[in-house]
Length: 134
Image (cartoon, rainbow, N blue to C red; front, side):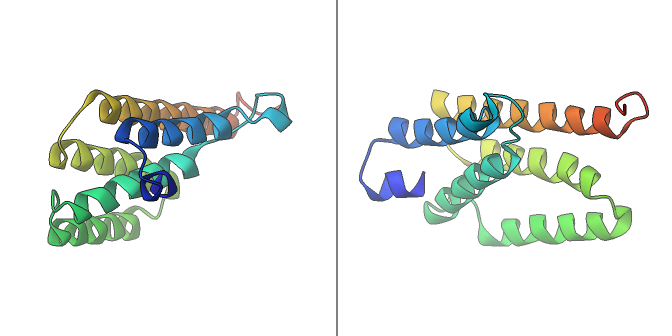
C-alpha cells in the first residue's frame, strides 16, 4: 500500500492493493487456494493506517505511545500471546476508526481485517482444542 501511494495512485487503488494482498495471503494459489493465514498482512495494513494517521496528524503520537505501553502491560499481566492478539488488534482498529476520517474503502478494509483475524483465531482455537485434534 505504501509503494502504491509512492507511485501517486488514487486512494481507492491504494486500499485495493491492501485488500488484494490480504486475499492473496488468505487464499494462496500454491496451496490450491486453501490454508492461508493473512494475519501478518492485516497487521501490515493496520500499520499503514497508523502511518497515515500520524502523518496527517489525525492521531497524536502520545496516544500511540499510551496504546503501546498499555498493550505491553496487558501482555505482562496475562502472558498469553493469543489473548494479546484478541485485544490488541481490534483495539488498534477501533483507534483507527475513531481517529481517521471514514470512507467506504476504510470501512471495507477494516471489515476484511476483522473477518480474517477472527476466522484465523477461531481456526486456531479449534486446532488447539481436544475436538480439533486427530
